[in-house]
Length: 343
Image (tube, rainbow, N blue to C red; front, side, top):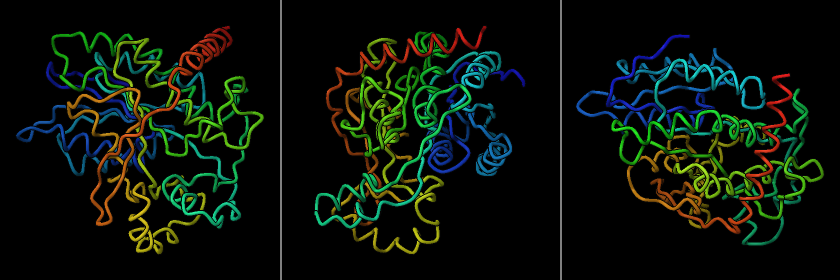
């Protein structure tokens, strides 16, 4: 643990799940886009559960950008104690926070639902390759805190982290040293698999359902507009698209995905959400800090042309008014868990 001496005009970005996949690509792209005449205008903090892998990621980033400031923060977003400890440590080490990317997540895959894969429908075929919609057989468990793992990792841990860092972010955004278009930015990683019909507002943890991943990402979608209204920050949601990472590796081995790459390029004529690489997948996340005014009631999805050029496709968030009820339920659960932890 050490205090990071921030330069007045250099911002700070915290990224969870930054040791691999889209998170690592995002970290590299943020540095690339925030370097002026060889000087890095952004410091990075990699929030990761496994510090050994985080240090490997840090070394890989520094190999590309030797003079960058890249720090590691241990955080397991599925654990209440870990989240609270990480927030405390971050505020000791950093005096500002401009951008918060809530990217860590899990997809509890127990196998492939082959019946869903071969359903004879063109629209189903497009949805399948845009989002992996309903193709996964999912299996969820409880964390040590008694919370369903997918909900804890994809939603609750990030929500509680933001609760503890929101005042620092607000102070940074109000400061004369704020970075225009960057300070006060929060981005949740969502998915095109966020299904409104998977979410039961009376069962946010999805104990009774069969699509905990889709439910958790639907909650994330609703948090964008709700948290923007509550905090005054710019809270957005983004979908990286279909990217070959450790998450998709649970469906099929990586070598199978790469063998299918030529077919995926053809499928992009219909399913633009096939981004494939973490670099392309990070496009939807890195775009928010470029200064363009974007709506918080819209999900911005990674997409690719058939030739492989990455771009961002906006998708309206349906029924955003449900976010108020979700926000209230999360705040109540957070308060309960904090009281339990402190006692």
